[in-house]
Length: 61
Image (cartoon, rainbow, N blue to C red; front, side, top):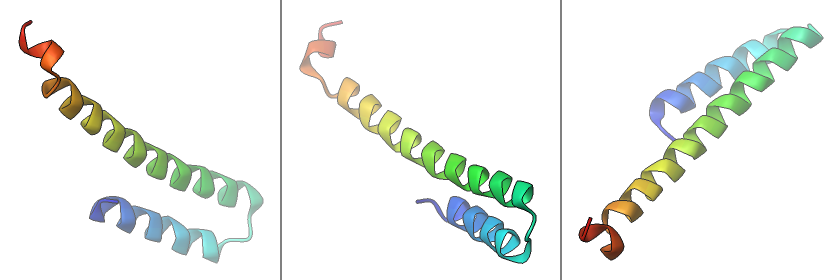
């Protein structure tokens, strides 16, 4: 996970820990989940791009 995303999740966690409001906690948890999912998808896309670039089938195109 990138340093920026780790920082963002930590900041959200601090806010989460300080509130008892159900709606705020739900929103914060969803934001954390989005950050984690976005990081995962970026890693997958980078892998897919590398695979496409190095695919011998693509060399002739």
